[in-house]
Image (cartoon, rainbow, N blue to C red; front, top):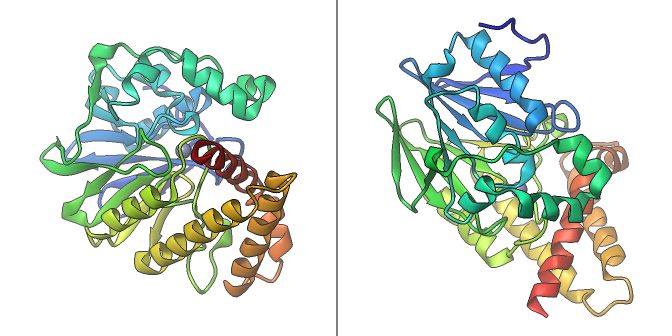
Length: 319
Ligand SMILES: [Zn+2]
């Protein structure tokens, strides 16, 4: 085994679940999860190429051999979740990548994915953030099916289609332990915004396949399993899910309404972004955070920008 990286930031949760900070952009923004069951392991989302050493270090810290990893689940193929999968797979001889049927081709031939990311982020930021994507041998990929049950050492993991954030998105239902692994379907909730009231959550409407009705439908479907905890990529474990689900539904409707109302403006993006910011300031204050401007402009600023771009893409599709 290699020396554990001093940067392996782990948080151990119940039910054999460990969160690993993928150090995407900075700490505390994106978490991959490891599921350990009777000596076997699965990885839920990966991060980028730069995240791979952190994941391998986490396996070392937990005493999990690389041969013991059976699955790498990619909830969807957005690069902050999936870009490092090809590189990670080189270190995991027995792992198969489980991906939505719409994502298989992208992971085998990532050129389109790279072009899409450059369109969103610009070339310089793309290169720095993600590095060169390693294509995945199609023989090591499994295209998931809606309702499919995958067994990790007998632990049943149910995979369900969850469009709305992306058409290539699925979620993992860990029914025996009442957990769900939600990728980006159940929004983003940074631990820095936790207060006595609990977690603060916002939906992610990022480009290019956001659809409000689909996203609310997917959240409803997740909630039908009555989960106690959701594991989000951004960032990790939240509980008290009915309150969070209600907030997500309200915000998704509000953001779609804001976008529609400004569709004919001279500069719809600026107006949409300003109204989303105002909505979030109100919600952050109501959540008991006094320095609301600092939080919205300092922590939620990237989501504000990406959500605006995604709402613009949605308006363009609907037009
Ligand atoms: Zn995403």
